[in-house]
Length: 308
Ligand code: HEC
Ligand code: HEC
Ligand code: HEC
Ligand code: HEC
Ligand code: HEC
Image (tube, rainbow, N blue to C red; front, side, top):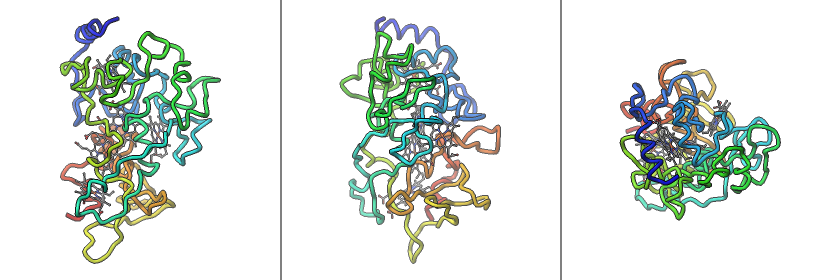
């Protein structure tokens, strides 16, 4: 099949994209009732048959959790809950290297509560790069630190067994840009297969290994003191310090938190985001946009930490 052939199929078969009523970001995912109805369902089953477009660049494991977690054979080289993904050794360009004159706190390489997200969002690892595939026998321990395409290709009917090959990353451009294997060949405004009428652009979701244009992560939270314009979290459980807004003593999904993984209690991606989605108004309600723990309406998320 040629690029042109695929593109016209896309145009003919797609319904209007972006009709979901409650989501800030236009999406066919309803963002109601759990992670399966969000963009973190890597099977994209909420698209029905159109999920097949993604078969060109990722294995459809037919399960939602398995792209990140496994009940057995998890990645024990990183202290993340039953982690099923490749965490490559990567050096990130941290925010402090930008050299703003205002930063006061020490910055370390992103902690594990950021590395989890970056294992997809930095664009260096395929979204389907897991250690333990569902079903017996398809397990490879070395996947914990390095991606093996031949292992991933062992998945029946996966992209590796098709003409296209390649397991897609969220990366915008590299030498493989023109292959279907890269998600961004269709989902980037610069991608050869991009069509704004039918395909959402994900350029801004590709965080990359350069974190100088992102809110700092791996950065220590300032201690209370004269002139410190930060609210202080009111509860600590082990390595997590959090704003216990409902006073139940638990770090609930909707509680903004700081993680101590060696640099003191620090801001990480999961301080602000919960990758499973957090209902905005109790069970059954639409989730806060972009997996936020707290809706940022009126900048409420920012003002949880910052006194401004
Ligand atoms: C896109 C990746 C991703 C998917 C898919 C995913 N999780 Fe998670 N999950 C995470 C990350 C990352 C954390 C750790 C968050 C942190 O750093 O605090 C986590 C933590 C958890 C935790 C422990 C902390 C908590 O929030 O309760 C449980 C339990 C959990 N996940 C269950 C599930 C289940 C069940 C599914 C499938 C229905 C699922 N997850 C799907 C990424 C994912
Ligand atoms: C298994 C791969 C994977 C992991 C792990 C992962 N993501 Fe994602 N994320 C995606 C994909 C795929 C999308 C859909 C858009 C795209 O292709 O970039 C997405 C979309 C998002 C979006 C946009 C949601 C929207 O409403 O449009 C946010 C925000 C996000 N991820 C944050 C995170 C954070 C924070 C973490 C870690 C706690 C994380 N992700 C972990 C794959 C992943
Ligand atoms: C051959 C082109 C193509 C490739 C490659 C591709 N996609 Fe898609 N993708 C589409 C099309 C077309 C749609 C819209 C389907 C619809 O609206 O029903 C889509 C929709 C999506 C959506 C749902 C958007 C929403 O919220 O409504 C997500 C998430 C997604 N793709 C993720 C990915 C990921 C991750 C990869 C790489 C592993 C990828 N795609 C590779 C064509 C592609
Ligand atoms: C201090 C809070 C905070 C931290 C830390 C944070 N984010 Fe976000 N993130 C946000 C907010 C707020 C938005 C919504 C921005 C918008 O609507 O444009 C967002 C949006 C996103 C999006 C959607 C793209 C966009 O710009 O709208 C992705 C993907 C994402 N974040 C991933 C991450 C990853 C990965 C990390 C860690 C490297 C991270 N975030 C750390 C607050 C944060
Ligand atoms: C979890 C707590 C937390 C949240 C939520 C948070 N921040 Fe921050 N922010 C910090 C910390 C810690 C620093 C580093 C402060 C320092 O070095 O003095 C920081 C630094 C900053 C800086 C200064 C960067 C520099 O170069 O000096 C800006 C601007 C900023 N945040 C904006 C925001 C915005 C906008 C939001 C909401 C989208 C937000 N923050 C949400 C904790 C947070």
